[in-house]
Length: 375
Image (tube, rainbow, N blue to C red; front, side):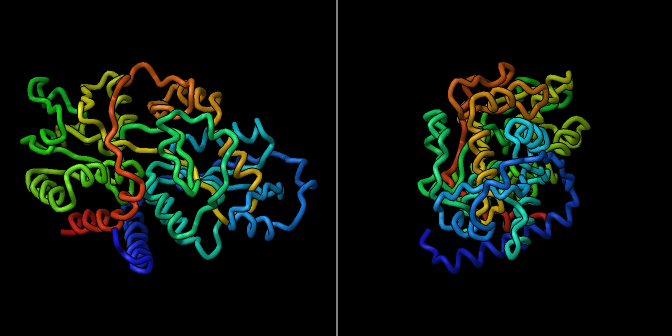
């Protein structure tokens, strides 16, 4: 708050370099993509050059020409599934590239001189807000299906229309191993989680997409200095940071940690599989991970990119995702008349900083965590 735009850009560039370094060190995530392309006959009907389309899109003019070019979707959950489905249903050409959150951001940063991506779908509205503040994203375009959002979903839409929310889930619930923690010992608040006398863990906010929403919720809730002190004390008592939530779950089962601030997808997956794991959704709320979509201002096919956003805001698409027999389907839909999975907490509250706050403090918080991992 109160920083100049130049200082913010410098800090964001530093943060991007940190993300890239941590991505290499962690050597985690998948770079595999799924080619979900199909023939799209309308390509010949496009008017104007691809360069003109990109220029119009960059200015937010809403040019909808179909250049016939393949669009590239960067993201994590659902992208491998939804890309071929979108292609089959619409005829547009799309290729999904599955990245972790830190990896996607580092890739976009590395490509800024020659962007290869068209659409981004990932957790963390603060990180995507940062991209918008640095003029990476198409703004000013309003999808026809935006009215499908619930009242809550609509409240998360930014004024410049730089990104669009589609779902929210818990970036962390309290999950504990019943072989090491009795029900009467289990924490029911985040303060009790931090005070637990035993090893705990969560994912790395510089690598795992939902982990920055996790820690930023705490820093927003308690204050920057206070939360740093709380984490410093927790590190001394035994706090393990893992690259992603999958390794956090494995550490929980092995007993390396007794409890975890674990993404709800992973937590419910373990519990439903019959593992000795119990879940607590604190009454104060679980840190929320808002999944959003954004379009590159340099998209090579604005018609296809916009069609993808419209597609994801359809009730039929959201209902399809909540019906999947995978843990990814554990989320709160932000589209009207779509029910969440019955196995999860029906009325769970979320702790969610504003996008502006999360963007403003992203580099500061991630850098602080990186320093703790080095020390």
